[in-house]
Length: 340
Image 1: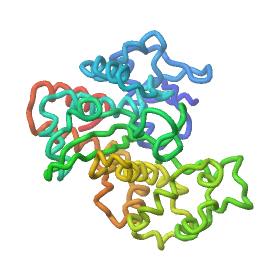
Image 2: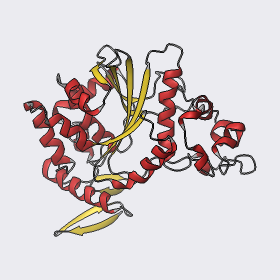
Image 3: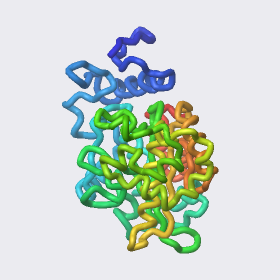
Image 4: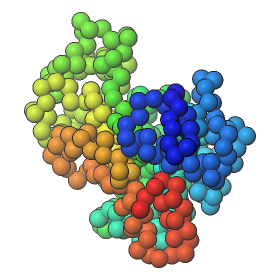
């Protein structure tokens, strides 16, 4: 924790923030001070101005007011894990709820999503929770389709949206949301203390690992299904030959796992979803993620099954409808997350 001074104010914020993170921290702390409280929250017994104090947490003050009760109901009916830092003004999970929940409960939702996804026809309101599920991992118990899910970790998408495409097929749209993160989650297998360097070789190429999956600690020791699913869909990773070692050690790892979740859902025996897509949505000023997104797009040959857009794209699509309720949310959201 450091003390940062700006405009005669002192901010207690994490150290080592990049320029965008610092800008958003300062803005969001000011928003908290102006709309909620000046009291700090605590992490490891240290006061942080970006964390909510315990006295206000239960009211969910960083969630759009009209979305608070729908969020609580959804959590009750479709339990999920709130992130450790959910009560934090820079919470990406809270930002995801604020971006999508007001839309999911609005009658004009179809008119918004039609602008964002070219194959979208209408929300499948009889699927999931009226067409959506937060923190979706494709199962209700066990370790999930990827075999990596526990009560504390595992692959999931921040929101899953069920819809019918223009051909009448039931599809699913998995979305990962990022706010101030400077990178996607990297591979923990490559740095695990339990990894055997004599057996687990992350320097192998894509093809070499597929030929001997036990080179990967995740496959050999943790028995995750990553490489089995990858093998079934190896042609999707069109430019795999360009990578001299495992391409999934960096931030691409999280994108890969979400894509594998999409494939796993398609491969499932019940064939509920004819097509499953995966997208990343991020703050438009967070350019620190762009390199990894571009790298992943190159790996998959710009396949349309993966896409990226920004929160501004969502807001702008909703703004075209000029609906009073949506306009109120748009003003609130743009003020909170510093969108012009």
